[in-house]
Length: 486
Ligand SMILES: O=P(O)(O)OC[C@H]1O[C@H](OP(=O)(O)OP(=O)(O)O)[C@H](O)[C@@H]1O
Ligand SMILES: NC(=O)CC[C@H](N)C(=O)O
Ligand SMILES: [Mg+2]
Picture 1 (cartoon, rainbow, N blue to C red):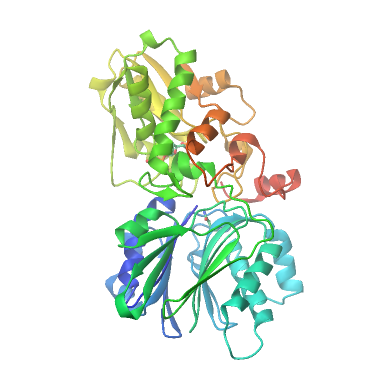
Picture 2 (picture 1 turned 180 degrees about the vertical axis):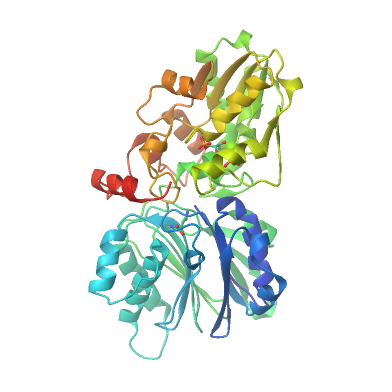
């Protein structure tokens, strides 16, 4: 998962793109980049690190123009440390295209071959995003006949992209001198929201972004989600065109957005992330009531930040006191999306501190939103014990993560997943917890979808092993496990 944003405005967009990226920082911390279009001239700055450290005043001043896009990267393919692989990516023909991408392509081996042998295109990185851009460019080139530009050419090109590319992709691209294109894969795995701001006589201003929180803070009204398979094109003067470009689109968004990735104040695919997390807490409370001797528990505690809504519901539903025993250092970023296990492990200790007064002699029930590698939970159990806890019951608002995620979340290898191939008591032993309770898969699904009409199914492959695109083979998973970063 990365954060992406694109804006077509009647005034300079550099600050608005920067502010949007700050709001999407929780989706990627490896590198970041902004590109703007001043007429048909592109300006771009990208760098390693977080938004606040990547852009200096002089970088911002150089980003001129009324159309722009930005990216916050959480690497899933390629090299997290390589600045060359930071997004956006650029190609100079046709027209000149700059693209940002959230997601992960699952047929990069075939694409690399085809792009080289058939399309004669040179990939200068191992990034899947560079491939996505080059497929788009090849297909757009094939549509261009004369000098006249027509959004239908772009939509035909996106139709071809859907034919050639497999996996998850929400993408935004600027086409020099023409406008802004946004499209989503035929399953709508990764999110993309469209917003509008009326600009009086000059026409409308438009924004597309990974999360609705960006639209709200920039003063745009939320129009709708970009539909799975759909492409949207906004001209430089603010006219919007859209077309369904996939043969059989179906909305199956990633469940992990609601469990952990997205900000709670965002609404995606019509589902409020915060309310989904409250419902996850309610369902988890029911399961806890089934398995744990409740009279035995003194306090319920969240692990800041993402598990707070679920934990508050667990406490309320079980009628047990809610206490915050872990204090979070707000200057340390999200642990799970950091590259490399050594850094992730170190960061948990830097980030969270247990307050002895909240633990001494108590039986604590700890709630986290998910347990993936167990990096956080292992440290947390240790810290709770060191702070004097009597008994530690660990609970997760998501089910055990047993399978790799190949659609934009960096968990490529089963060997690093603490629940892969282990039964729950074995995981509890690994974590050092006295008891361990997970959400059931069906409960997670029901909790996220409860009361929704737009979405009827979710992408839950990391919990179930069922990959929604139907193209993920055991051989591919084995290759990913062998070759990708962890
Ligand atoms: O089992 P693990 O591999 O440790 O992954 C799961 C943990 O990582 C995330 O927290 P993170 O610190 O990234 O973000 P948060 O502050 O939003 O909870 C998530 O909320 C869990 O706490
Ligand atoms: N998490 C993402 O969306 C990553 C996008 C792209 N696959 C990259 O690694 O840069
Ligand atoms: Mg957490």
